[in-house]
Length: 152
Image 1 (cartoon, rainbow, N blue to C red):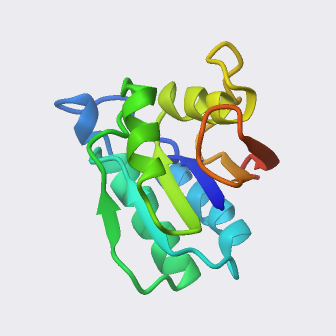
Image 2 (image 1 turned 90 degrees about the horizontal axis):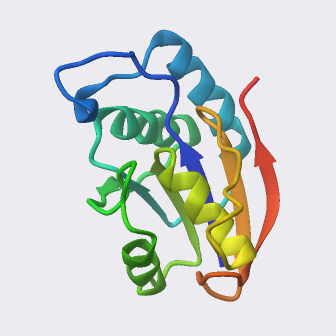
């Protein structure tokens, strides 16, 4: 099973609420750069946080790679979401190739937990960073970090 973790691109610093912050032009460019690494990958699903910047990031990726499915909004992928809830949800998925678009500190903590089995070593996820993980199943400590790309 493969799981790609993508942090949203650079977002505007202010909006009425954190959830309403949109990508900047620089953020859109970062996401385009990261999306290039996903071209040709056999993605079966794109999951994204309900926050505007994550939805925009997921849509840019969907278009850039020609993914024909829709982006699935998952309410458990916000900046301060519970890692246990995420693992329970992800473990129930039947796809063998998923992309999750989300936020810091959640994305770094999730990636680190999946690879190391503990929460003390988060992955260093800058805006639009893309981590590629692989394992027999999505579970704490049972996945391997194959690659971690930061946008150019």
